[in-house]
Image 1 (tube, rainbow over the protein chains, first blue to last red):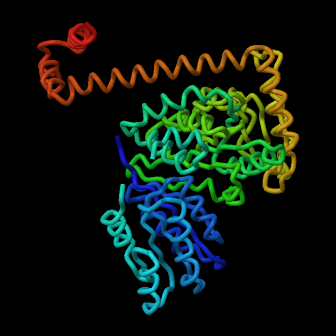
Image 2 (image 1 turned 60 degrees about the horizontal axis):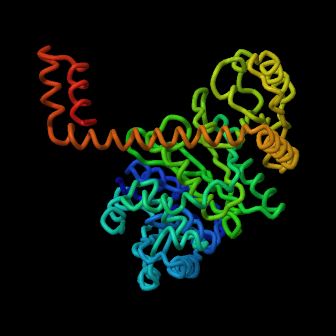
Image 3 (image 1 turned 180 degrees about the vertical axis):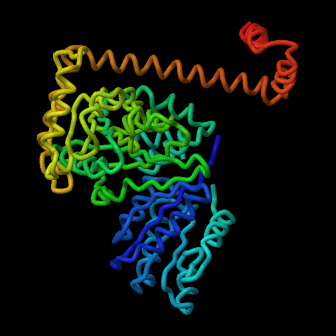
Length: 131
Length: 312
């Protein structure tokens, strides 16, 4: 029996910049994870439902529009409502340092800002994922 | 959570967990399958295959919408390749199907091939069964982008649609063996591009030369999936094929063959696991190999005596 780490990489909100999400998706693939990539402009409802159907262990979201304060906590709530208590939820993008404590308070396990080596994301997932 | 019971009650998270258990070969997977099996056999399985970039995911999205208009529920299993080097995968088929995510009548699951070379994963058929037991009317199985010889889909699907696009090669490509032999239906996607009619002619020529042709000649349907053009025509031919194989007994024959193949597969993999447990893990294999290397014995003699010992 083989437990493979499955990660949903999603872009909530309306900005169209998915370069970062794709770079992270690729790094996670190379780390041996199965990465479900859902693309741009996802609503929190879509992200939570895709996470359920794909039974992922991790949801990784990227936002560059500034709407993280609203959208990240919303996704956390919806995922928990669906009974997926173990899913590790992480975020990334251009997010001011001052916003990060509130996001963590809301249930986002970690927030990765520009310049983070992709290896850090991989290691964080390996250390914190619940299989 | 009792996964099988919850799944049969219509709990989507349970369906999702069941597929994970199947895919990862958890110990409880066999028990889950035992409980689900009596509830399977009701869904119609439609296979979608074709080369990378042919538009399989976009087509799957449009087909699913059309079935939803008819009031049918839809399960989708979308397979993408697993890296042979890292075991990782990018499963990107959902990108084309995001509009279906919030429809409760649709359930989409992405799977990596995880070492299987036939265009599906080893566990695709069991994932289909889980969706079948869940009560989906139609299950669409989308293969990885195939080359010429990944034809496992015919074993898994009741009707197989081969999706092709103009401009992929000359008429010699069309007479080669492999995926061009397996279509119950052919679908020319992106048929607004140059060369679509030429491709139709080439497939027709290939079919003209088919010496095994039954009285079902695979129809060729031109579509432009991204514009939702031709989808209802395509589904009409799927219905025709379904009707044809239901009436002439071929559907039963296909499913019987599938059951037989599945049983042999399970038997083979269980025997394999048993032998691995007894020979490989105990270190006996290495000892045998060493003896064979020194030519003190040979593989055929060793296998003969191992078989005698195990199957007593």
